[in-house]
Length: 493
Ligand code: SAH
Ligand code: SF4
Ligand code: F3S
Image (cartoon, rainbow, N blue to C red; front, top):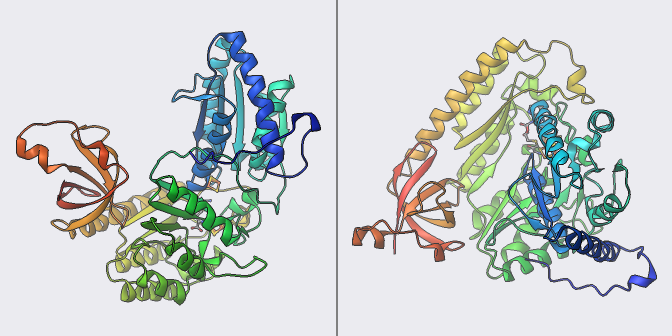
């Protein structure tokens, strides 16, 4: 998939300086190294990529798989493989701990297969204390690299396969964006598409700007070309990815707004659904709302992280909006796009958060009535301004507020979902249901999950396997029953 770029590389001339040619050179070298190992083992070599964290990381993992595939590894679902790479996240402490925990198991696999290669990359690796700990306590690791030089993966694999010692390559930041490397998509019919990298917002609790670097947008022509290729390869839905898509294009030589980019993407024939995340409320423009309202392809879903409903806390969070401005934005969205689903992220227990502050958050939740919300307990990230703030909230109080919030959010989400019961709506079919092979599973434009039967089977009274030919197609489904946060439905033929 997407491995259409066929670079002619003269292996005798040494490594090219230019990218991506340089990486294709190293892919060819790696292929030969893998072939030699295959001969020695008398079998194919296997690889496993494990993703922690957000959709940005998931997309990066597809890039890693694209390279591993190209150089001859067979992807497997188990971590008992010849090459295992963890693409890590460090947004909260528990994301971090998970990685250390699981590395222990990998170490045991390596005792059984001493030639096994273990690599670590992603956001956690941008933190010096992490790399120091890995070097000291996890000496079986072969390769460590960060977020800024992931495009160099082929080159780093060659080094790790040939050098007998740990290879570490971490960059502080980069302005470079390398296009046209191979990518192995998880789904044939939908895909993430990076439109920008990094973040300049420095919300005071957040580690992302430190581990993902400064904001840089891809050229619109590169984005459009990527989506056109994806569509030619069967993709009908794209998710445009950026930490703050609403500030897209500001640093381009020829600046362009996110709304303008969406207008261009809308024109791509064959593309049926456009999603994006994440939108920072401070940069959500009227122009974007207008484009969404007019669009036939942009999904009626806005993920609009609130973080806190207290203007006092929002200020300390460095979010650049207050409670009233947020609520006004929601009103504007609903006025322009009445059936829009609004989802959010909320942090409970930010330093200095009082009961009154928490009640403000609860108030916003009740006013907005989110279709769903991710709720997080504040996690102290060293290096961020919030980590230095006094009056960190006691754990007991945070837990109590968190439970109240979660209950409220879930109840509202269930009520909202119930309102669509009985409706017939388009569903993008994603897969055969994981637990019941007579059902298909897909998503509504508002991102809700629907499990549905194909009525033809019901008529004949047999419970046969679901119609897999519908995967990747958009079909009308009657949402017969709401089950809280998902639906059971029937295909309308
Ligand atoms: N760029 C996106 C989201 C990035 S991280 C945005 O601005 O919304 C995803 C979510 O993780 C954030 O929205 C926030 O709710 C949560 N998060 C980030 N840092 C956190 C921290 N230190 N503790 C708890 N949750 C955090
Ligand atoms: Fe983190 Fe804020 Fe940037 Fe989102 S916008 S990634 S929360 S700093
Ligand atoms: Fe985690 Fe990095 Fe995403 S810290 S949330 S994987 S940008």
